Image (cartoon, rainbow, N blue to C red; front, side, top):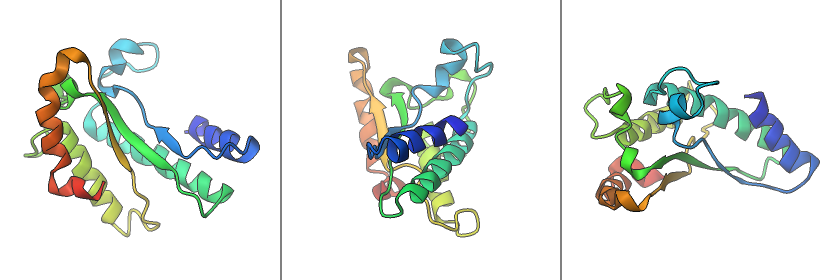
Length: 155
């Protein structure tokens, strides 16, 4: 978490670049393959949510110290559209939701609305972030369903 705070501080306080948009992570579900030196186990949706929450709140609080009138814009989860279900590596318990992203959105909405856990009302994700590879064009229908889901309307 120290690196995220230092990045916000460096860019927006020291250098005065006023960087407001940050994308959180990239394809975290495969980090145990692509970053074996750092990540030893698959990243579950629940574990990702906890990390996202910790980092985004810390970054937003740091930005508030720098300029209380300026809000960061957070893009997440930055995953390829073919991996919307995320559960290929054993994380298939989405508590009756259609996909891992539906579950992630629900967890974010619940946290954002909980005044005890989130007294400052911080939003965790401002923009749902996906990328697509040409071989994954069939997954666009899943994104459309997610984007028009009732909990996503607040995004």
